Image (tube, rainbow, N blue to C red; front, side, top):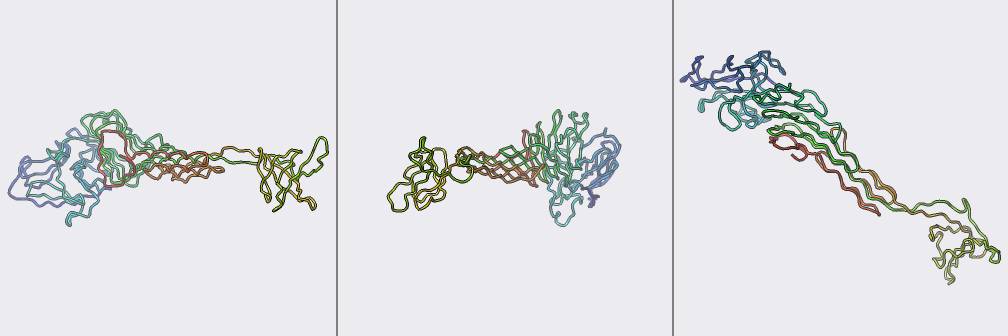
Length: 424
């Protein structure tokens, strides 16, 4: 956001500048140097970059003509229009926007400090000298070209915001301003939300007042997406907004092992046949000794003793790959009808992990697995790895996927007064 400038200029009456003549504290726009200047009592001092060749086509966002002065609330800096671009009057590292005023002065108010002979503005926190470089020496003379991101988008490459001539111009610093309320996201975890691009000459300043967010990692240990990837060096990131790495996907639950029941014989009902003299024998009987009888409990199937001596009060018994069932008692004897069912033992699959939080969706919980299998791990939130899946009775759960970085690459510095979730 930009506001019109409130200017207060106490002028010292004992010293003056020439060409043109003015007293200390006077402010002009030099049509020759294409820069805003002030009289320090002896000389005219540039408050920002001097670009004599700046086209006089007017500034945009907001609209302004050469010499117009504004206060940029987002950046916390007084700017002037040099005829084509808005030019900062102080280094980003010296500014602290978002404060509560400078001892009663409003943000954007300008004063001439006669004790040090310099022009200063209130950045909402401190009085900042105008026209001094980041190293604290010399007048700011480096020209720059500025691009603005004013609407939300996905998978943005910063180099695409500049014309190629400016991008490869070694005399111009590049600055991109991401406005408040704008979200730059990604449609896939493998692609960062914001790339700097390559082939640039001179430095790049990224001022983020919006949100830069990577995509979430896929279920079952997918890696979260990066928010910002710096592809070349000499980059300064000034963050007053949000930069979020995508959450990692949750790990899959461990495998389980369980039994399933197959074909039943007979399909319904039970078998019962007791004729020990038949040839071939066809006896099918459950022999229950009864409590305290001292007689073993047996199962006879097709005249073969398939189970011998198990507890008398059992109603089913597993042996030889089958589950046998005790049926109806036959008369007054301890004989019962019998049936059996095939037992199959096999592995079951662990539950799927949840997806990670990202610009493309919220984090989700893991799913339950099959019989005796583990539950999938939950997807990670912004900048966090996914959770490990729980173990099953036949295997451990998988580790969750790593989170995406908030900022990755090399050769960059970060000034952060906002929120950064993820490594940088």
